[in-house]
Length: 352
Ligand code: NAD
Image (cartoon, rainbow, N blue to C red):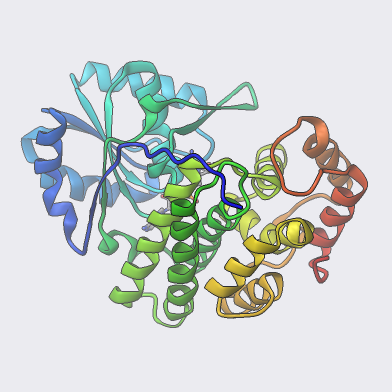
């Protein structure tokens, strides 16, 4: 029997090859006159390219974004944006870059225009995280939502193959968990299933030919859908596992998602049969966990937490952290079963 509430957040999306050419028009629509361009040290070339498009409207390129948004980096960037007289922020990069722009928006109310270059999906969410004194504080605030998002698949051509594969798995994980979220809706279910389908079709093509423009476009389209559901429904065990393992053991974000997803789905499978059917259908298979493992094998994504550098003696602490606070999940969280899941993910054993 259907029972749901559906709410949509306002989001403006411009999608298409070469769509970064519409940057000035999008800034006009937001009323931004001079924007700082935020990016990482590794993507300084992209930052410069965006500055060239903006010409006199670029207040400066600030390239200090790093993973987990350290508070001192956020404060220094806010101060610099103020000195430069910026009235807006263009975030060009992946989740780390957009995360820094969100921290700026939270403190300064500057509006964000995002140009995502990975499949992580942060551009479509009101979620933020800031690391202070070794602790990552996370929250939800509509002020950090990018007001306009330009998805230009050409900006993803330089994303290294391995990161393209794991980042794609990261996006699939958002959609998979959305399909069993208690606050999901039929519209988000459609988006989630289509997002998984688009990514699962595009990633093997990108694995073969990373410069395939059509596959880059399809993957980014899937990432948009997966990011949208991430921003609108509550995530469960899988995201809790990844957040804990990434945050407390400093494991790489997208890779952890790629390793953990089949284990989290195996844990939840018997409590979320409809979601499993839809995930399997999107992956063109019978069994969601098995097809996902097979996809990971095809894409050459990491198989175990051990190979990501997780210390075995950290598994008990990880299990404690995962059961510490309540969060929504279709199957109740039991420490013994979670510890077993972590052991399996550590060695890369068959899930379940
Ligand atoms: P990332 O932004 O950390 O990027 C990883 C590396 O790849 C960086 O060096 C970056 O400069 C480089 N890179 C990115 N795109 C590139 C491209 N097209 N070409 C060449 N190099 C490129 O990676 P990510 O996985 O996108 O983001 C991870 C972070 O985002 C984590 O901290 C995670 O917590 C956060 N995140 C937040 C949300 C949210 O809703 N708040 C959602 C997803 C992820």
